[in-house]
Amino acid sequence: MHPLHSLLLAFPVALFPGALLSDITYLQSSEMQWSNFSAWLITGALVFGGLALVWSIAALVLGKPLHFLALVLALMWVAGLLNAFQHSHDGWSSVGTTGLTLSIVSSVLALAAGWNGYSPSREART
Image (tube, rainbow, N blue to C red):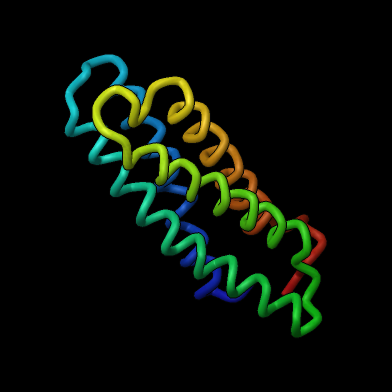
């Protein structure tokens, strides 16, 4: 994996789980600022995750076997986008059950992408 691609992938791997922790804190405290933190973390994860996805698609076009990584990044980005839309609501409805579930899904997919991208035993050695 190219070093710049690794750097781009590091952001969603860190920011989506950070948003999940921020959502959990919001549900425990009802302090609205935690929901705002989640929205910003999700936005950052989407920006850098989108760049990592574009890089993976470009690598696929160039013939490098990053199929699984590109698929997981695409699923992560779609789940994160839905999560961003959910977090744009006001008050309790911004997180609730749906927002928390989307944060969990986004975090798991980001961690799976990181696991695959950074693993030395993955099928694509570029």
